[in-house]
Image 1 (cartoon, rainbow, N blue to C red):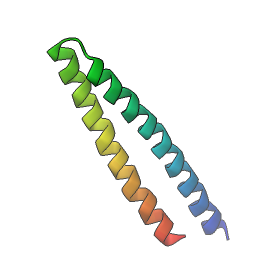
Image 2: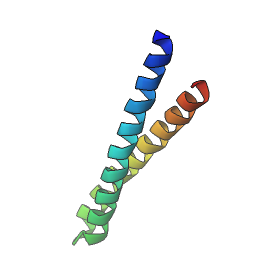
Image 3: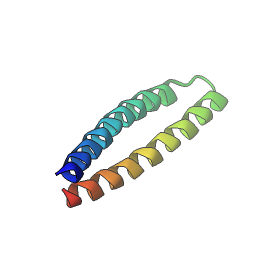
Length: 69
């Protein structure tokens, strides 16, 4: 039973992380669109790419945890 609770906790934590990453991605995407010069836009695009990669990894982890539940 403790393993199941731990799995539920992992699922909840991963879901929460996904929500945060989604919000960050949306905000960075907006900032990148509003960037006034190329260097700022490029920097924001790089940050956005990193957040998107993290979001994809957390989605993968979430799906893996859900299959174990």
